[in-house]
Image (cartoon, rainbow, N blue to C red):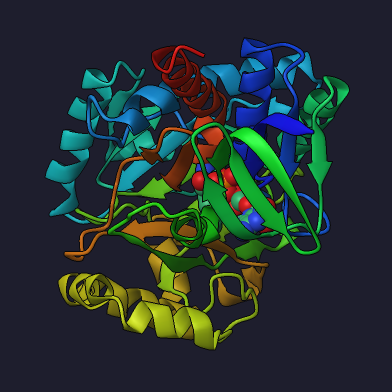
Length: 402
Ligand SMILES: Cc1cc2nc3c(=O)[nH]c(=O)nc-3n(C[C@H](O)[C@H](O)[C@H](O)COP(=O)(O)OP(=O)(O)OC[C@H]3O[C@@H](n4cnc5c(N)ncnc54)[C@H](O)[C@@H]3O)c2cc1C
């Protein structure tokens, strides 16, 4: 049998893509290839659970567009599938004088991106969130929280109900694109599909190279280490509380996030990882390290980001430093409040000249499309990302006269 579509990677981007393809072409044969024995083992299952509203992203970027649209679509999807989400809103707080102009610039950006937001002074910060202090803040009322594992499970149910197959414990060993199909060798068997879509998250650059795509970037893993607050602190905040992000970096800073299960998480930091899929602290994969250290872009990126890199290292190694980062806006927190949680590991694409790629990146060949950079807010944006991919594949098919 020749499948119409083969999606590699059963994260939220892969499953949202499978769903969009089935909506665009009802009845099409779709197979999802997932290397793990279950869904949600990587980024989609280890994130902050925030439905971002899209305030941070460069106007006109794919992130700005797809996040805004994705936030609304994710909420609709949750309503349709009875998945709880809460519109807690978010407050971004400047705690140092030098952050105030950056916060004001973010407020201007919210306007450009069409996001509802309000600029408030320090007194109002504490009126709205009594445990939070700051010089000034931005309130973004539409940011929400959800469990992306629940969203992933609902997507899996929806696509399998429509006839899609999800194959677990399956990983391509070879991929060959020909004029009329893509061949995929999987362990002992092989399959063919008219189109292949790579949605492999932390392994996306390897998958693209295996498939013969010429790419210049590499994925560099950034650990996002979290703590959970002691249950007595479950009401410490109502909204999500964020610091002003470091300029130039695609990470948002250690934040306080009420989770949909009623607990509150602190984090994530953004610590360089030495293993793409090694979750315990100090995990090291010789293969991942070897590839990273021989990639010139890695060294150029490290050189550019030495100061924030060292700050992240110190707050990863010393709980007291991590706490200090949170106490800048929530002084009441103590060391006893923080219990380590399983981290997440971000797939961050870094270019050959050391730049961290900020926007989503898709690369296409006649019969393949590879998602090459889908960091946060890709969970929020997954539904419109899927639609965009489906539209690109249909367009490519039309151009071939298919
Ligand atoms: C710490 C952290 C916090 C975040 N917080 C948020 C947030 O609050 N809101 C938000 O919108 N986004 C957030 N994100 C980003 C978001 O989680 C990711 O952008 C999104 O989950 C990416 O989905 P994905 O499907 O591309 O990747 P993944 O979820 O990583 O899925 C990729 C899948 O591909 C499979 N795979 C890989 N290689 C192969 C292969 N060769 N063969 C078969 N299968 C393969 C993997 O096993 C995996 O299941 C966060 C990310 C992290 C790490």
